[in-house]
Length: 337
Image 1 (cartoon, one colour):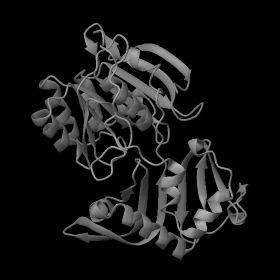
Image 2: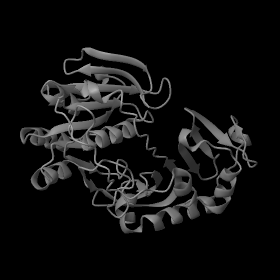
Image 3: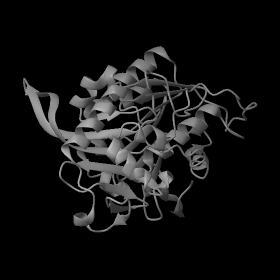
């Protein structure tokens, strides 16, 4: 551990609009008016699902619910507002206008990104060329995932990620919708800024889907710290090597590792002296040990800390923090936020 100097006071990011404003702006007018009737706590809203001729669905306060025409929650799909083709088309057009500069690239991968890191998953008919998806047409479903910035949610976790030799190579393990990206973002921010007892570090982030920094036109909309450089919209493996060659990071952070190229890039970055902070989908260390691609990396003993999340008490619940051998260092049943 190295003592930190005084905390930086400047914030090199462009503040994004609050989720309610950013997401309402891309919804079709009827859907916008319907949501206005609902007294939603946007901090508790995780997803809005729009599927043609099917009920308007929310993932809200850790459970699925539907909305009626009058703006009331209901557990009955038949009583809910049925999304029309026009509502779906208008929402997609509004969202595409926000992200027009990257529309074709993103839609080919099945999503669009809004300022603030909110992501719209897209399904429809795939148009392929030479065995690869060129674009999507006849869009029939949109899944709007609401990004949340929770400063301080890493307070209880970060001290466990240091050893006598400094920051540990760390892997966050989490099922979907359990707050891993939110926790990752706050870890990046705190490591970059530094905190009492720990100096700030140069952090390089490969933000392939613009969810960590919430960048728009390359400018982060969410606070990722004063010493953080972001490669926005860049494939993880290629981005890690670009950062190593150009930005001299002390820590490289990536979300949702998975492919062989990701594993090789992390090993190369570590050999160049970088620390690694990454996430992977899974419910336990035992589960990800069964994944062929990840298991090979685990067998090398690279990771020195594992943070396991679940949604037992809401998104962000830390179930356990383990050392590199799988020994429990800290077991919790509370959200760190």
